[in-house]
Image 1 (tube, rainbow, N blue to C red):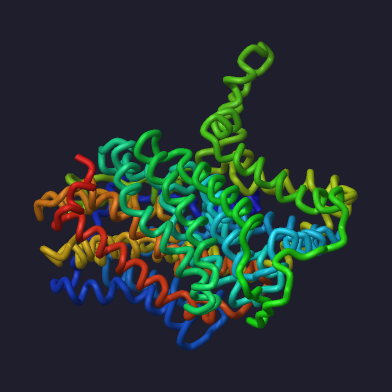
Image 2 (cartoon, rainbow, N blue to C red; image 1 turned 180 degrees about the vertical axis):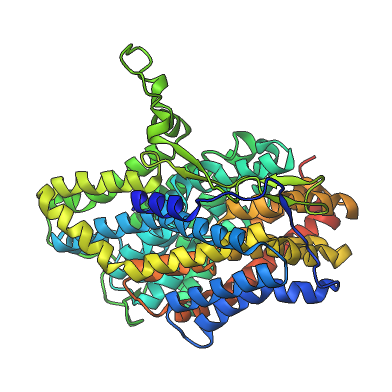
Length: 583
């Protein structure tokens, strides 16, 4: 896939262009409200065709891309060649690294199913609890947070949705609930990558920004598990297991606050997720609800809290081993040291005098996108001064998270007794099985990237900045919009971090707070971004139902984002909440 993406990029980006950068225009129609409506058209077409008209995801994504090109060129005056190059660049980014992650997670899942290991894993879960509400809490929230902290970029949704569907959850439940659960940890995902990116564009320290986010999100780290179980079992079903939910949420929220404020953003999710998993499992050894829920919502007061699955300890360990290998390798691939070694191995092999070719040009190719790299100029008030946008396709084929997952899958395949030949055949079958999902991800990322480079995102962002005294609330929703558009809290921070800082300074409120609010509000947009929805539907093999998933999570996303906005508003203006702002 990586080779194919590179070939496509090289083929499409040939030719010369003018040396003069094209400057973005944020109000090309002369009326900010009209320009904003037009800028929103690609998103409205994409989400509307998906949720309202129930079109297939790859058709909706293609329509959204066509609309994005038309608006970018016809109304915002982006040169058509540049718009086309941007769309292809976005498609390549969709295939690598994002599609690469999902492909290899599904490959591992399909191998465990074919060898029967997944059935053992599924039944072994009953040894912890037979209550589906508690299984949801443990896997979607606590276990998913670990994968978010280690890798991000769709990995937690892919893994937890696949696990839930194997445990007997319906496809819509497995998809939608995995998306709802993957919110509170997102700001510190991939070892704090969103915070690192936010620091780069705002000029504030990673520690200050991470600490401020850690004074906003812990409220939601407690709330989201309650919200998650309520979405599945209703208020009454949630109330029956509130002690376990409280344990899972509080044991995540307290480490999240402490680590982010006294250590930094890098290990926040990893430590908090491990604490949550350990505390919840230990708690379930001494407590269980009076009524045990099954997958059909049926509950039985006489059903045992923990089942007897009939498998020996060795069989259970072998069933969990592929996922343990995956967890270890994903963590190693996510560390700064691991990435540095894989991206610049010449430092490791410098003692070898025969090593002539710089390895970084092999393991970490940085391919400038001809016709786009430094050819787009962002202008005030989005940035303090005119700034050219880089466009470099990173082909870090070893250090990419998907490569770590592929290696974990191959190791697990050998452990499960599969030959290399059989694994190769199964991998190619997985590629064919996922062809439409990969096409959809590529098209949706094209829409997101084109929205960024054409300035459509900034036009929508400036509309939020006009809200004056209510900016803390609407600025938080700007972060939500950024993630909904791009599928990434990191990308949203890069897009709107500087704008948040400038707007906050003009209004007279803390710019550190508003920069952090961009990342904190963005986490709630993660459940409705098109990329995550396709990942969830692919992991559950529920193709063609992406619109159903979007409708399932949409109002949850808006409600939770609005609550984050309320918290930020209180911290901006209302004592004693103002004392929570980092100075």
